[in-house]
Amino acid sequence: MQGFLLQTQSIRDEDLIVRVLTKNQLKTLYRFYGKRHSVLNVGRKIDFEEENDDKFLPKLRNILHLGYIWEREMERLFFWQRFCALLFRHLEGVHSLDSVYFDTLDDGANKLAKQLPLRVILEMYATLLNFEGRLQSYNSCFLCDAKLERSVALAQGFILAHPSCLKAKSLNLEKIQAFFRTQSTIDLETEEVEELWRTLNLGF
Image (tube, rainbow, N blue to C red; front, side, top):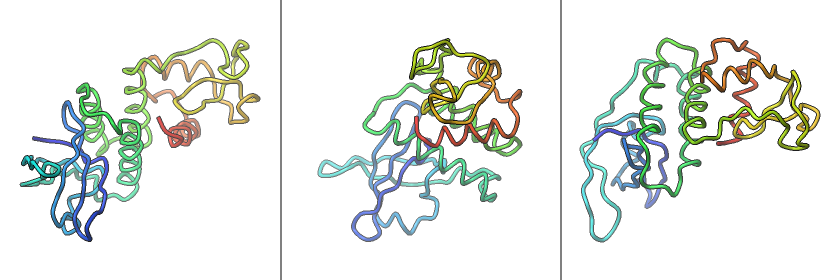
């Protein structure tokens, strides 16, 4: 079975509880002496076996790291791990999932070797928001309900508002709406991408 590690939690000195996103589940598993295994870090893709335990959590066994070349680059790894941590917070408490969450991570991980990490992460985020029905181009500010004009600001979850209402940086409404429609950052400038990344860090 394959999955992405979204969280590791230390218990009993060197043991770990890990949360692994598989094709259709967010699994909570136990690994003896998990701290000794360098592969057990947030964001890693692994192949593994699950062993049931009637007294405690299922055990994580026979782990194989399915590595990517970009994991050697600290900047790419940082952005990837940050996104995985935010995704875990969003999914925490959920067990059964649509395959879009795993597939989006899998696709993004493959793209990271050649594309700019912030753009890959933002497109993954937009894909998931769109799947959840939350990426909508409202015509009015969510704070004052007045019509949006040429400039907008983004709140958590990429909700649109007037820059004056949100006290945030102005972005071009037309370009943001195009990003919402396509889930592509191709038309966004570097400064806009960086602003979207700051917003993403507020959480899902």
